[in-house]
Length: 174
Image: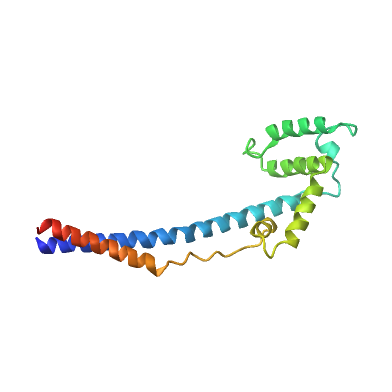
């Protein structure tokens, strides 16, 4: 019976160490998936931006509004167009992302949103050295290293497994 217990304890120790190793591998994979998604989203946005011809761009025409419309009318029209023209609402239309970006750019142009974006970009460029959000806004890649595992964690795990092994042995042989 003693050999069976030792075999079971060894199996328990191996499973515990294996699960601990997996726990520290998961963040690394999550970081890699996140970076891949960010790159794909940036590439898609860049493609859509290239398709929009800003040379022949009339914001009033895109939103189908008269030039004397006030901000409230512009906002109402934009919300109505977003509800009907968003790419999620039109999954079968291959031109939906381009149309939506034109609507969005027209709204930003008429409401003055482009200035805010320029200000944010300027702030991010000035503060990229110390601000992680500024680097993220600018789309600069950061390779995050996996967290370092302190040796004390391994020592604590070994102590825990030793106590479990001793307790099991003591309970079975008292």
